[in-house]
Each structure stands twice: as structure tokens, then as C-alpha cells.
Length: 362
Image (tube, rainbow, N blue to C red; front, side, top):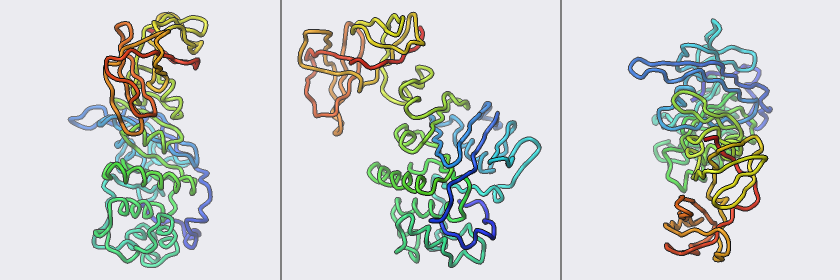
């Protein structure tokens, strides 16, 4: 929901003329505890560069929604600070009320007002003189593809349309930061993919600094320029989606963001010896390691002249097929973008290719 009116000088400006954000968000040493729950946030440090999107990814109860509420000013941190550009919003002896932060928020349940029509919902966060009629309302509805729904009751809209109304309402006051709390969790799978694609387009078109929380790895990787993975109140890793997926900092994170198989190996000089043969490994890793093998890195073939495995499970997922294999007593998972080619009990050849792998010291 919008967090307060905009400056008078912006009153006649529309969303289409919104300049790229020049204000970044800095979170330093934020801690928060609740009676009966203990420590919910434990020394969180994050930096969201101006005009970029940060996805906060983590399991339920890890503290990600509390972090979002602290940024918005709905919760007060016990320690640490939140800055928007050079302006301290909380901490260091300062506190800015939520309505004065110029931060927009889209809640998980969208929080629309059922007694107001679509147009008045979108204009709710604008100055009173603009709430019934404003170019910002018109441009916001056009941006989310709902220009023809201005006079409709929100109770007559589909879930995807309600979500887009909530997004237009949050963007109408031209916030410096947009926060989204599990914005797609109330949508079915097919609609979720469509709506999040639209949200991605809108955020990039406006170059708005944004933070959204999710427990869905695919959403985080799709929408986040950077991803912060949280667990038990701490940031486990902060980086690009590629860094998080291909070079996770520990085994827990490796399994949290995707299928992962770990194979014992001996590493030295940029290579590792495994039961599948020798593979290239990041040169910084040496000694006894557990090699991380993602399913898409495992090539399968009918030929059994080299390293082989036995298919123990086949799962057809529509867009791909997942195989579980046994190789010298070890489990290996493979995924191919095709219909099932092999059967349970069949012996198949295995090829890990010549790409570089990642691993963890044992």
C-alpha cells in the first residue's frame, strides 16, 4: 500500500515520465526479536543498488517478511539502521514514520478496499485532491492493463487483476522503493507465471528500486537482479542468481535452491577425481571435497562403453524428465528436456561434460 503523498512538484507528473531511481537502500546490522519467538533477525546487512530489484528468498519463518516490515517502518528494529540514499529512516537515533518514507508496498493479500472501485483504490495513496481524478490513476491503470476496469468493483475482479490493482496503487505515488510481500502466493500456477512476467516488465520499465520476499526459488531468480537467501534470521548468501545457484556457500543452500547431488572426490590443481572420471573444479577448492552436481549437468546416453549407471526412477514433468540413477552405490540425479528416453532398470552411459564444477571441503 502506498506510504504517503508525494511532493507537490510531482503532482502533475505521470508514471510514464518517472525517472530512473537514483536512490539505493542500505540495511546495516538489523536485529529484531519478538517475545515468545526469540531472535527473528540477526545482524542483517544488505545493499539494494538504485533501480535494481532484490529478491529475499528463504523458508517460512526465516525473517524475510519481518525485514520487509522494518524497511517499510511497520516494525521497529532493536538494533541496526535502514537508509534510503543519505536519509536515515531508522537507527542512529532517527525514526521516520511509514507514511513519510515514500515507500510503496504490495501486501500478500493485496489489501484492496472493497467499498472503493478500481480507480479509487489506485488513487488512495495520492493527495486528497487527486484521489478521485488524476493522470497518475489513468497512467497506473494503463501500465497494468486495466484502463477499462476503472469503475469496476474490486470484488468482481480475478486474482490476477486484483494483484495488478494493488501494484498500480503502490506505484501511483511514485515511491522511491517498492516492497512486495509474497505477491504471487494467492495465484494458481498458470496465472502466477503470467502475472510475475508482467510485474517484471513493469519494474524494469520504471527502473524502480524494489525488494520482494518469496519462498519460491524460480520467482527469486526470475525477478531479482540480486538474491539474498535467508535462514534463521541471517543472510546466508547475497549475490546474483547465477552465483547463488552455481556457487552456493554451503550444502544447505545448494539443496534449497534446486536439486543437488553430492559426490565424494579428491581435488587438486583445478580438477577432481570421482567415480565418474575426472572433472574440472574451481581451482580455489582442493583436498577431500563433496562435488556439487546439478541434474542438468548430467548427460545420459544409450551407449555403455564408459561410465554407466542404472536408472532407478523416472519422473516425467512435461517440460522435462527427471531420472534417478545408481552409480557404484551412489545416487545421481539427471534431468533432460525431453520425454522419457530410458526405463527403470536400464543401464545408461553418463557424461558430466567438460564444464567447471563446484564443491565443498569435507
